Length: 203
Image (cartoon, rainbow, N blue to C red; front, side, top):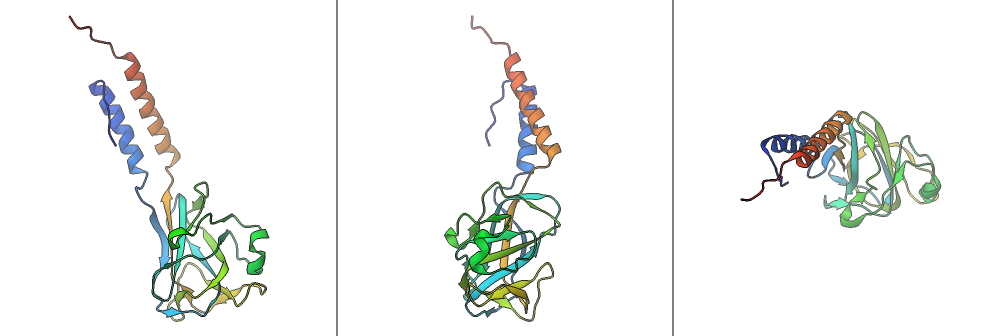
């Protein structure tokens, strides 16, 4: 981030605003929660996984992926986000009352619209509308959620199933209102100082 200052006071205000902004905005998404202990590949089936975001705050820039049998990121079809467990069929996901649906699965990562916000301390449920084999565990367990499965698109999801799927949920912290307000004050101060600067006339 580059700063242009017109006076010492303007520099102080601008630097303060920059520190507030960068201190509350990650250059890249943080891992909000994950499970990576599984070393077994499931059969090809429709999958779901519930998760809990342990840290407080609000998060945007949400992305999610499972892992395939080779332990590489995996995203197939569309992933639907719910605030409670979904008990319908994969074929009916698109018409269900979900919170959000992924807008892309490029790069083996389910990506959600930037307007989607998740709250820390809450549990969320992700269900995919495509069948695939995913890496997971039947002995180690993820304490913040559970796995759900169904063998075909016309059978209801069932669960909690045995074990959990390997996954990573990522997001970017949303600045707190106080930080955003301080940033606005800093930027407004910098603008006011710029307007008040006295031009120097060359002689």
